View 1 (cartoon, helix red, strand yellow):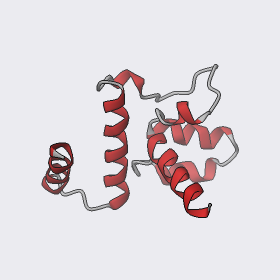
View 2 (cartoon, one colour):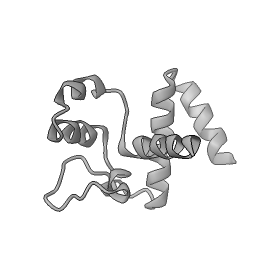
View 3 (spheres, one colour):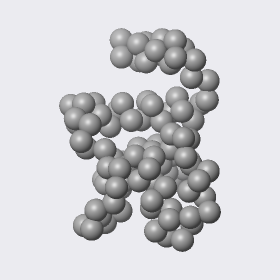
View 4 (spheres, one colour):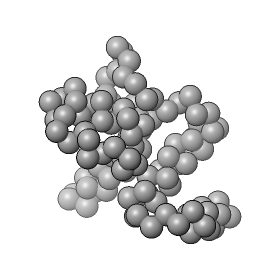
Length: 103
């Protein structure tokens, strides 16, 4: 509970008003907590052995998401994500919410 309180207080202090940025920060911290705050778990660049499964997507940075869009011929959307904070953890979370809400 203290973690959630500190996060809200920090976001208010930093004047983060965009809900998407708030959700992205929250999901990114969650991923880092799962990895004992080891920042090397976040993938910025694609590797040759990437399988794009849900376990790997969770660790994608915003830049890696843009690279993925380029690789699947959706490069026209990549510039729109620059600075948006949309990371792999957020994509996984939104996908899960969509799946369970439609079930």
